[in-house]
Image 1 (cartoon, rainbow, N blue to C red):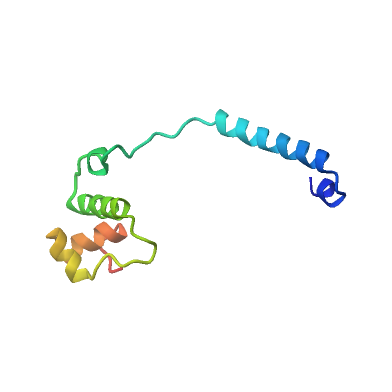
Image 2: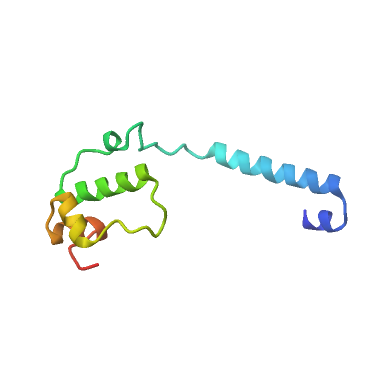
Length: 103
């Protein structure tokens, strides 16, 4: 297609782009659709928690999604998050890092 554009052959470029886009569309149609995990309300769409840390991780995720927090915005200090989620430091760290180790 690049050669067609450089050569100024717009018809050839258009046909090649159309063929490319058709192939991309067919590829996407042939893939199995992904399962939608997020429902009308995120808190209801997430399965019941089994561990305290998992519940906090889900709550933080839902808060970020529902509030539309921009990348880089702080969730709060460790002390604020401990108070907000009524959790110990170890449980909060497990929720946010996936382990009890310091972040």
